[in-house]
Image 1 (cartoon, one colour):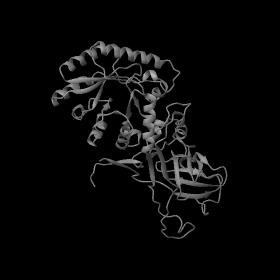
Image 2 (tube, rainbow, N blue to C red):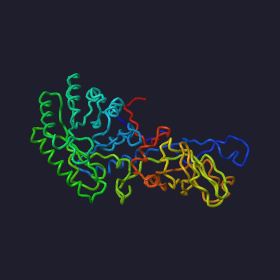
Image 3 (tube, helix red, strand yellow):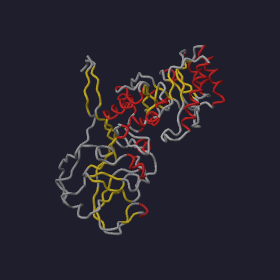
Image 4 (tube, rainbow, N blue to C red):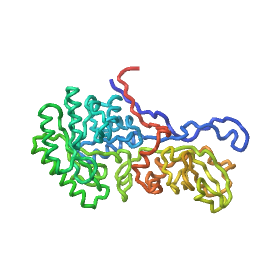
Length: 417
């Protein structure tokens, strides 16, 4: 009988000091703490909630959980498993190598990979049963792999409806369909899907999406007229899933939404019923008093306006924190403090805005510092605004130097010890 239990692979919480002795005002009070020095805490229950929320919004269309780029920095394998547990039917990756890694880890659900180069290992993709996105030139390479392995390749044909990236140009679509039908009749491929990608769905009022939807419908009709029995039509990304029900078709491809983030400038996560999944935190590593006019970090782009207490936060652009995000908020002991001066490779500085903290019993030295995520903490969007970028980039760029800590992992027990 299968049993499940929910666990945290590494739990974060309030610092629990281990007294290590020494001299000075911090002796016997600040010591080693039990949580990681730098952690991206990934709440898999929040991710499951998001998948279920998207499932309700998109019904009856099924969900492809997009886990490319190491699941937007959250960890491809744990996220893939949690998304499938919550009802996702497909997984989406950019590269064949990403899909093969999931297969080797035991993932059996359909996986679509759609971004290829002349160096892509199509043979590995076919061998591991990946669905392969085809825009044109790749088809012959995939067919060659199918011949070599003596097994049909599963393909989705992609039409460029206006984004201008990969996807077959409309004037070459019928020729691609004709070739695909020939290969399918030879038993070398099985065409299961037709898909495309939207350009401005995060701005729902723009008319270009209407044009893309119409172009997609025409492409699907052409495929059906060519004799292809289309199993899944998919066009919607996260913003279209929430704002354009006419884009749902048979399958929606949701990336940002399953990570609990909003693609819209005028709606936050809560407005969409989503819960942010990642919390980025570290430990205040230094705390000191400085006078007015004191320079802070490289280039002296900031000087203190008055005597104050500075805190050193040991993460920087080497950890994926955007270098230009001066002014972004950091949560320490229940209050927000701004990043001042330039962010360096390994560290940044915050201003506590008052004096007398460094050597006091209330010193924040050793306290947990949360950059974003979690209840009451700064939002990913606060950091995105400070870095003049989007929330997608902020979470995706968090580097491997930051330990991933998975909460609410479902462990399966099939009767073994």
